[in-house]
Every structure is written in structure tokens, then in C-alpha cells.
Image (tube, rainbow over all chains, first blue to last red; front, side, top):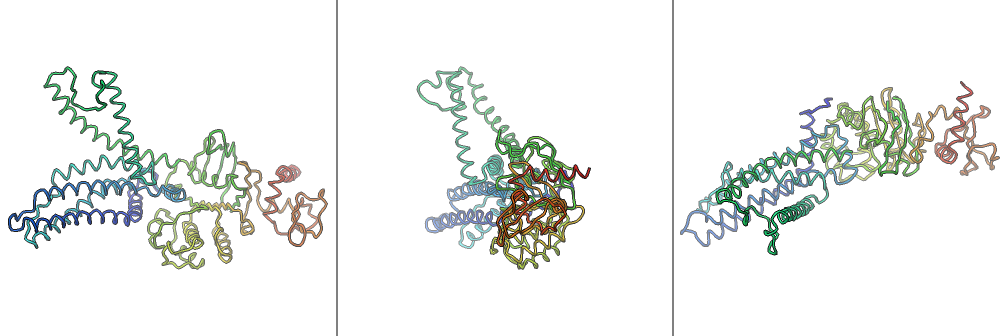
Length: 269
Length: 285
């Protein structure tokens, strides 16, 4: 038996993990699509009663609602799905059973990561595509032209990249706080953001006390009150800020994912 | 071979469970690991499996360090814990999910064991009682054919016929390259099975001898009257008289070893009992 990475063992772990999670995963995804369908149906009913014959195209506002709802559901369902990925670690006998499986820690981590960060988005997006075709067919049968969101739309990719960044946090939460992980991760995340903002404001207040003088403890990138020329201010506020955010997100996701691996390794000790 | 060399371990700082523990367990034997609650039996088994790490000292299992958690070693160790976990799925699916991790797993062996334990092979694990679940996991553990089998309270929750089956299966299973360690409080269920006895007390091994040595040095007798306390090492009231433990002087044939009496004697008078074994060894030398 290989002591280093083995694709065969990873395959076995993937099968085991999928079998373990599939029922809950299907329920969560099913509920997500049910909400999406009910919203679509409600919007379509409004369309038929309000605009039928006057405006044969599906109302743009309703379309946006559906697309936004898709994004929210994609993220929420994905995070819940990720949060239950390490349910193996909840009880001691279950955790011992999982940790003593003959596979390396990296393989165990990789299996969960592939399921939650790769397989889930692909499956969800494909399901959404099927759902869109279904909605289109339903609309056609009722004489309404439905605008569907293309699978390769830049909007979908942007949502997917958000998913990957935040999913890594929920994966870390699932390893560190396996019980009621979803809510605990959100609570810890909010707590950390609040602390970070307080620290950032405190630092800013120490550097430039007049900024925090009696008014606010808000931190923003507008650099108001700083003696900076307008063109530099624009560069700092928008271009640099946006680039830094992108770089931060690109680095953040693999770093947090790696920390979740280290955390799993630590759980073995 | 399992060896512990000067191993120290504790769950809390300044509260060591094991301190400079030395232990050597050659292959080809069934070991009985006995001890009071909290003596460290389960922790010792977890150290062997690599689920706990020694803070000091060296542990070697099949010439590897278990804390490295190499898959090759993990696939040669199976531990059936006192509290065990079985997922809610059919036995067949359980096999599909878990058996491939153990290269020597024998499916037909597994079904034979299930049949002998009278568990339906198409059953859903959710519908089984805890005793039946234990039988499924025991069958799985035995069919994995790992070189090291660690059984923590294996007969708990088993019915009387199943205990007999268990003894028979285990005795059939032992071979020159395997080590089976059974930790149990129900030693009367197992005494006929064990080759060696290890007694742990407060994180120390206070007794480690083979059954052959035990019968060579100790004599178990039942007397109808209270014995003279100077003549026996240990005495306990039993139905029909008094069970006594005394040095084996070769005068009288001993009854079958009673491990409960042995355990009580060793934990009450560890030095006296150990002295008997070492004294005899010195004489022999």
C-alpha cells in the first residue's frame, strides 16, 4: 500500500464521503431548488395576470429576482453543504473511525474539498441549467418568453469565485467546529470582522486622530480628510483597493483551505 | 511486534497517565489487557493505533511509528472500541464503503462470521440492536485480517451463544504473524482464549506473564474452610468455599486459572506476586 498520495485511495474516500453526505446534500439542494421554483412560479403568475398580452417578455425585474435568488441559494446551500462535510468529527467514536481509516490526511482533506469546492458547484450549476430549461419550457407553454441565465455568463463565474473564497472559511469552520458548524462559523466570522474593524479604526484613530474625532468609528477606503491629490485619491480608493481585494481573495482562498488541512492534521493528534 | 520504550503520555500537563512505560508484545499471541477503570487500557490501545501520540519515548508497531499514521500501517491495524460507530446504511453498502481500505479483507469470511453470529446479511444497520451492530463490526474486524487487532470490551452487549462463537473465531484467527489484544473487564468470558496477561494499574504495567508462567508459579484452589492466611497469597469467598491463590509448590494440581482472582490478587499485592515470579526466575538462573 502506497504511503504517499494515492488516487485509488482518494477515489475510495470520495465514494465513502459522497455516500455519507448524499442524502442530506440532496435534501438541502432539493429545498434550494424548490424555493427557486416557487419564486419562479409566483413571478410567472404575476406576469400572466398583470402583463399577459401586453408584454410577452418575462418582466426584467422578476428575472433579476430569480438570478439574485439563484446566487443567494447557490452560496447558502453550498455553505451549508460544506458545513456538514466534517460531520465525521462530531462524536468521538465516529471521529476515531474516520481518522483511523487507512489513508493520508491530505487524501482525507482532498476528498472533502473536491466534494464541496468542485463537485458541488458543478452539480449545482448543471442543475440550475436544467432548471432554467425547465422554466423556459414552462414559460413557452404559457406563451411567455423566459430569459434564462447562461451557464457561462460572467455573473455566474463571479458568484462561483465568491463561493470558492467563502467556502474555504466554511470548510475551516467544519473541521474546527464540526457541531452546528454553519451557525458557529457565521458567528465566529462576524466576531472576527467586528474585531478587525475595531482594530483598524483604532489604528487609524492613533495615526490620524482627527478622523475619528467624536463622529464615527467607520473605516473606509475613501481617505477623506487626508491631504492626497485627487488622481492619487482615485487610484488609492478604487484601482488599488479593487486590485488589493482581488489579490487578497486569490490568496485568501488557498491559504484558508490549507489551514483547514492543517486543522484536520491537528485533529488526528 | 509492538514495543513501547520509555513512553510517557498524559491528557493533561503535569498529570501523566503513563510515565516511562516499557512494553514488548511479540507476534503470534493473544494478550489480555486488564485494569481498573481509568487505568489507561483504552489509551494504550489508542497509542498503538496512532490515535494518541506519546509525549516522550518511542512506540514501534510492526517496525513503524504509529504516530506517523502511514496508510500502510493503518491498514494493518483494526481497533474495535468500546463505544463504536456504524453509519446508517445497509451492511452491503458499509462493506462497499469501508472494506476496500483493508487490502486483506475477505468478503466470504465476513459473511461466514455474520452467519455464525446469526445476523442477516441484507440487514440495514439502523434496524439492528446494539448487540447485533457489535456482531457486524466484530465480523468486519475479523474479516479485515489485519496483523494487529485491538478489541476493547469486545464481549460487552454480546449474548451468551455469541460469546462462545467469539472465543472460537478468535482462537481460529491467531497465527504466528498476528497480535490480538483484548481489553476487557469480563475476563471470565475470555480466560480460555488468552496466551498472556497484562495488568495495568495507575498507568503502570504491574504484571505481564504468559498463562504458562502463571500456571507454573501459581496454584488456584477452592477450600471449604477459610485458609490459614500465612499459607496463601490471596483468598476470596466464592460459592461453595474459598478460592485461594498460592505459590505453586508442585504438590497439588492447580484448578483452571481464575483471572478475576489473579487480577484482584495482583492489584492488591503487586509486589508479593511479582516477587514470586522473579524469585523463581533467579532460582532457575
